[in-house]
Every structure is written in C-alpha cells, then in structure tokens.
Length: 219
Image 1: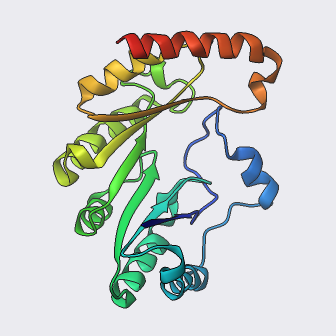
Image 2: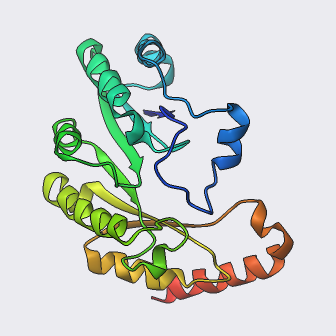
C-alpha cells in the first residue's frame, strides 16, 4: 500500500500561461502569492510520519505540485526533504515534482538526483508556435529544451515525464506528442485545457477532443 501526499509549496509562478488551471483558485485563496513557511513544511512532514500506519505501509509518494511553480520555493522543498529524510523510520519516500523547467540549475538538478526524484516537465512541443500559450520569449524555450537534456543526463530518461496541455479545437495533440518523443521523452502525459474559457464552446470542444483522442489511439 502506497500513500500519496500532494504538497503545494508556492502559489507564485514565473510564467503567465493563458490556460492556467490554477489561476482562479490561486487568486481566490490569497491577494498576493504565497510561499510555504518552514514551520508548515515541518508540520506536514511530522503529520505524515505520525500517521504512516493509518495511511500507508512502507512507501509514501510525496509530490510537489503546481498551485504556482514549485521551484519558486526550492528552499522549502529542500528543507522538507532533508527534514523528512532525517526522521523517517521503516519508510521510503518516493519524491516527485511538477515544474515548467525554467528555474532549474546545477544545484537543483543535483538535489533532484541525490534524492531520486521523478520530474514532470510541462512542455507543449519543441517549437515556439506549439508553446504560444505558455512561453512568450524565444530564449525561455531554448533554455527549457537545454534543461530537459540536462535532466535526461542526470536522472535518466525513465525519470523525466513530459506534460502537454492543449486546446482540442485549435491544436492536434499528436503533433505535440511526436515532437516530445523526438526530443527524447519516453513518457508523456497530455490533457486538454479545462477552464471557464471553454464553456461557451463545450459542444465543439468535446467533439474535437474525441477526434484528437482517436488520432492518438490510431498512432
């Protein structure tokens, strides 16, 4: 039995994706972006350790997820992991993180490698046009592609996952999947945009989503 704990360490982000699923929630929760404190991180770790027999057996999957960009709070993530590792007994933590990949540096990559992280990177393809909804500057895309290769080399191809978000009525997700495969990804997650912008066209939207799904299945 594996327990799963999702932790939102930050509600701030270094991008401004026009399809962001968490923007409404993020702005509704607080007037200004927040980063988790060490005190809260410690309380979460203690709660997991104190209740492990009720929630899981030997393994717990700890996932640092969006709400903002998790790596805007890297110091808190590092604090949590180091605190947890020092105090765990008869338990193994499986660490995962979702990121847009732009804030990665050697310190962060070495940390991820040392603690055997699995990393999910949001990327909608390898061209500027494929990433028009999320990356506004050409040099950001170039840096992301470079950082992905660094992750492949440090963590291995099996520990880096692509996360694609797309508009079914505007884009073919199969094109995005193929470009990510060409980049080296072995594991790819994709999901349609789900926010209030699709409500007026939900009939057409779901029809086009079915077409995209059929193309992927046939491929």
